[in-house]
Length: 312
Image 1: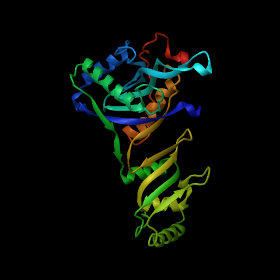
Image 2: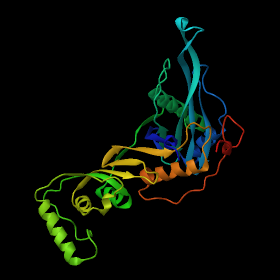
Image 3: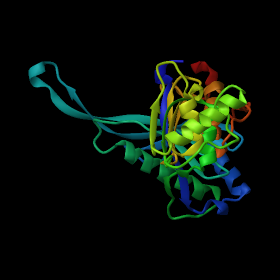
Image 4: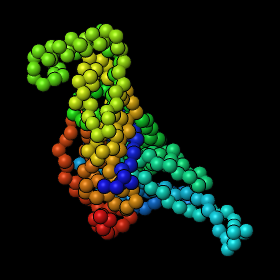
């Protein structure tokens, strides 16, 4: 997979309307509205819409489109170039998680437009979804969302460390701590284990913070010092390598971001991309363990009657 096929995304939580007001029936109406939309909303050159929409269970995935005038140059000679404005459409990936009211939105940079920027595209998508929710039967004046904020427990942070290839950690509050008896630092040699734990207990009578980075190609799970620190202190940050060899940073508290395998140069998502998005979201946001790979079922693209596999 090319590096360009991985895109960073922010995760938003819908605050208004309160998502428990969105009954299963309203959620289904919203899904059908998204899947059935074939026309732009608004007037040229400020139209908005969605394309390549794809459904898998509670996930609606696709691309959001927004139009604006973009500055350019024209002229027959270098000495007589003049600035012009021409309409152009940008698109960003989105995934709507119907049952919990989460929206995953691709982060990107835009330049050269009269008024469009990345924040204005996020606001445009927000207004567009408000329009669709009204169409689904829940009348609202506006839709409000905020970054999805996560505070992880220490058990969650330690699970991230032990379940993944860890390349960097930052741990605090080690002073006066000891490695729990349930943690095994070495090979199953009781005498060596007892000696190691006494050594680290003495170390933590001096050390309070630890910031460790693995050597190239190494895994901190093989480090006794890393395991001792993770098990004894407060874990603030862990950087892991994903299965695609992309660094992912986990903080004890953070606005959640995920990186997904989506080629945003194409018009439609592939089955593998849909599986990848759901797996990454499920692993990092929805639940804390890996899930079985879902089998996606396409309900058809929008704005184009051709099969989404044409872009593979």
